[in-house]
Image 1 (cartoon, rainbow, N blue to C red):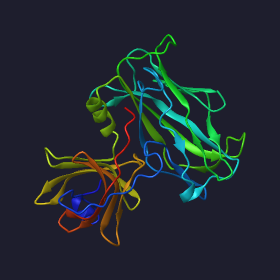
Image 2: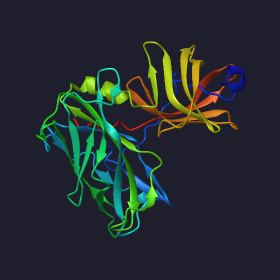
Image 3: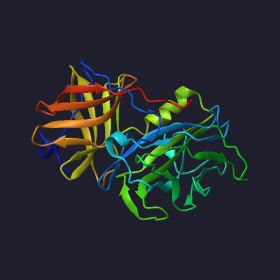
Length: 308
């Protein structure tokens, strides 16, 4: 067990006080999964995506969003290689306050891949093996959409109104091979809206974020901060434009893809994605000592595309 005296000044904090923000330009399709390759690593533009069972193209119980669009400007795939995915975890349901490992009426989500194979998520697990998204073209790019649908226990298109969640690992392989030549460090999450009001669905999605600031209470929760080799959950409180650490606990392992990382040399913390005041920010924070920290640099991220 670590104490505050052990962590200071090596732990963090976050301030979303008045700072100058610079907006990032949205590139390609902001709502798509946009991987790019660096060596054996498949980087991703983000790890949380939204989909709507009820969009115009798919109807009430199906969708092909988000799409998959390789960012060749940052790192193309090997020409002819396949972009693939591995289903992981279970189908989860938003009960109004938390994501749970059970569904109301035996619902399942099915994905039809590029080879017409069916991958199925249920509350008890996944089946159908690895999926294929598409093959890299002569520029090393892939731009594909694959069909996803929700069905009830009888296998008929349908499902109780609510939010549903699946996870999958995206990777590259040689054609007809299941061995990755490049893979992502963590799975992406796709949250599906099945008939909820947008505001209610947004609450479910926000619960997936690593860092959230509540402007009503002045409290900031970060679910996973890497400090050296250790990971922490932390909570901080805003006071006079500085955040003070008020609670923390060590984690046994990494629990989030978009890690906040503390730098011992510069005494700064980089948080790649903070939800605050209804917007999204990438923030750098400076340790001021005595468990208090301030924003030294922040960029407002491009608005996420909600496929409502």
